[in-house]
Image (tube, rainbow, N blue to C red; front, side, top):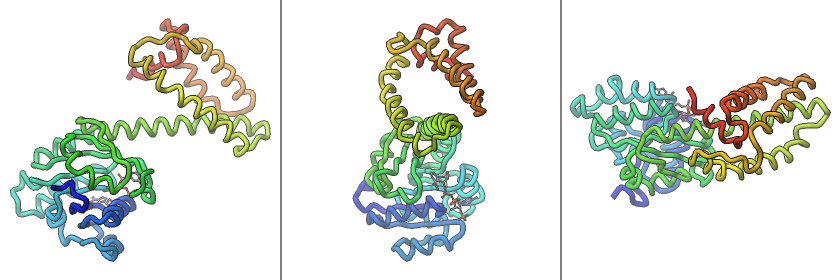
Amino acid sequence: MNNTPHAPVTVIGLGLMGQALAGAFLKAGHPTTVWNRTPAKAAPLVAAGARSAPTLGDALGASPLTIVCLTDYDAVYELLGANGVERDLTTPIDTPLIDTTLINLTSGSAGQAREAAEWAERRGARYLDGAIMAIPSGIGTAEAVILHSGPEKVFAEHASTLGALGTITHLGADPGLASLYDVAGLAMMWSVLNAWLQGTALLAKAGVDAVTYAPFARQIAAGVADWLPGYAEQIDTGSFPAEVAALETDARAMEHLIEESEAMGVNAELPRLIKAMADRAIAAGHGGEQYPVLIEEFGKP
Ligand code: NAP
């Protein structure tokens, strides 16, 4: 019944992201109840048709589905824990979230997500954790990727409502998965950007501006991205035959990058770090294998 085109929804937390989430639900025609610690932030949403709940308890009771989007997990506990709902609601203190489905889109770690799932479920709620891989202006468009993890059944029940926010995915039953994918995506993003900045800094020393180098960098990044499925198979099978190049060949090229960076007066910390990892793998006997064998170095504490 909740998975209807116009199922009611509550949004708690009307910061930049919470306002965008509530706005997208309204635009998609969902009766939307909102609540924020600073009530004034609800005004534009009320003008657009939202109902501003007078209390947190009222907000939680207004819809079968409640989205929470606050600064961090501490804020979630501060609000929904002893200082919030448990004081605010007339329901028994140990079951204030009974019959509520909570989807927590607050950013945090996998451990925090698992802890919050247990915390919410102990209080009778159904719980999904989520990660938003988008900026507020993208919410409500297909470009907004929103990851969810936790019980599949809960996701399926609310998928059509959640679809108003963007491209939604359920990753698995472990509530920590959405946060893990989130940080894995960030690792990818920063690694690509850092590699690009290294090359841009090098070429700048030769008078090549960033805009000139960018299309070449883009081509290289896209080419490397195409290697991922094949390399992933090597990782999953634990077998790394050097079909393209051996790690020791890569290591020699890394040395060139370090030397070139030092000679040009460019920061060589990043190339040295990568070379140190490759050297350890070679010392462990993996020099004749292919690059993804470095997963063993990445997998260590
Ligand atoms: P924001 O604009 O700073 O809003 C923070 C929200 O949390 C406000 O509604 C604030 O209430 C509320 N809050 C903080 N502490 C609270 C407490 N102790 N009790 C009750 N409410 C509390 O942040 P945001 O940009 O909306 O981000 C919210 C979450 O979305 C974060 O986890 C962020 O990492 C994630 N996210 C944001 C973006 C983005 O581009 N903005 C992208 C992806 C993910 P008041 O209004 O009363 O201060």
